[in-house]
Length: 78
Image (cartoon, rainbow, N blue to C red; front, side, top):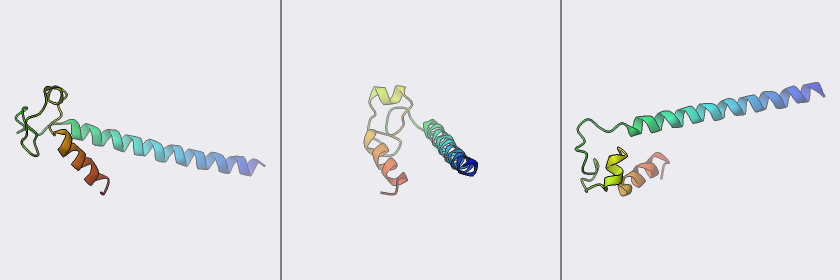
């Protein structure tokens, strides 16, 4: 009985560790993404050049919604 409890505990610990590592990696990716390129003009999408809505500029988002969607799909392998 004790062996089974240890085994479940070990598996749970490994799962928690994997989840923690995935979370840390996701947060790091978001932080890297949030840093706008130094040559961004703070008015237009860095990728396509379209004017950005004021809300995206204030939020330091340098891609328009369309370009951001394409970027996210590429990152997911679509």
